[in-house]
Image 1 (tube, protein in one colour):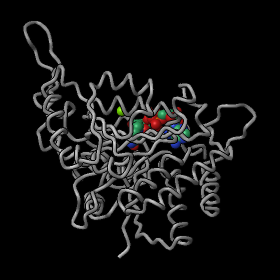
Image 2 (tube, rainbow, N blue to C red; image 1 turned 180 degrees about the horizontal axis):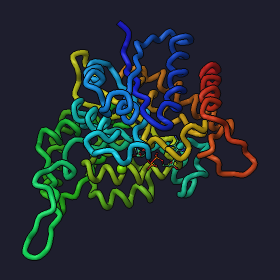
Image 3 (cartoon, rainbow, N blue to C red; image 1 turned 135 degrees about the horizontal axis):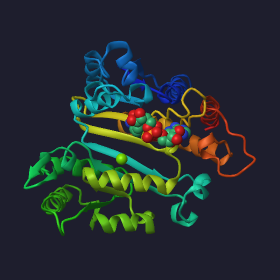
Amino acid sequence: SNPSILILPGDGIGPEVMAEVKKVITWYGAKRDLQFDVSDDLVGGAAYDAHGTPLHDDTMAKAQEVDAVLLGAVGGPKYDALDFSVKPERGLLRLRKEMDLFSNLRPAQCFDALADFSSLKKDVVAGLDIMIVRELTSGIYFGEPRGIIEEGNERVGINTQRYTESEIDRVARSAFELAMRRGKKLCSMEKANVMESGILWREVVTEVAKDYPEVELSHMYADAGAMQLCRWPKQFDVIVTDNLFGDLLSDAAAMLTGSLGMLPSASLGAPMGNGRPKALYEPVHGSAPDIAGQGKANPIACVLSFAMALRYSFDLGEEADRLEKAVEKVLADGVRTADLLGEEGVTPVTTSEMGDAILNALDAS
Ligand code: NAI
Ligand code: MG
């Protein structure tokens, strides 16, 4: 049977950028004879409006069964006053939690045509292609005890950094697997100098490395890593790190390359019966209420998220390359959505014109 995809466009610009991905999926069916079983459903505010919950149980069940979930974005001012239990982001958090998506892949890639757009020197970022693997389901955001308690005559805010060996082992394996498909270089970042969890992290990663003799493993303290990431990011291929450090490092790395409208992501879980990992693909950006409904959104982050699905869920690496090259060509040709406008005198294209330009580049590939 055909590989299955569940599309959850969500709110704001989510449906706008997802419409362009649907065009790309249709292109693959028509021109490359790659058929996917695509279904569509609601998440976030859209699901709340329809069902009074940001993720219906039926949608959750479908997400568990498909080969890949593609999500647009959730949230918006309309839902800001809602109770926390039904806020749009709860839909996304539930998906991540119940699918147990512990490995978050955040590429930082710089297309040559946008190298001038970075806040760094052009030679530092031109051709940059690195991947940060962030542990997503454990660590200090989840560890117990947590809370704000009274102690003496003042309050204390408490969070706990906690990692089990198996949690470190599984995210390390996913990073090594990734390194095997890329440049076979992995840098693990923690703070083993001052944190117990960092000591254990380093030990477990070193142990897992024995199963991947071809991968060159290095370790770096996360603060030094942050510095190196800004100084000379091209020294890295894959970086693996915990939830907190990964949050910071991936946001910093993202900005090496420019616009939020360009950044894809993947969140992977354990392999299913067919050997494929559970997977959710989504752009890094949110629902962008400031530009929603105006045809201004850049669909590239969402399109590149689909390219990641082709590569990591469907083993279609060459087709993923094809799609990424099409995006690269469009950018090289000077096609720009409004968020990518650096120079004056260039007229921005709309979301759907950007999608059409990508299809044209695919046709020419
Ligand atoms: P945002 O990412 O939606 O927007 C930040 C800025 O970047 C805005 O100026 C926006 O116009 C621009 N931008 C974002 N994506 C763009 C694109 N594809 N093309 C062109 N410009 C783009 O973040 P913000 O404003 O903090 O949050 C807005 C809403 O989105 C909130 O409700 C927030 O909770 C939600 N959100 C959802 C996420 C998700 O679904 N994964 C992630 C981040 C925020
Ligand atoms: Mg963040």
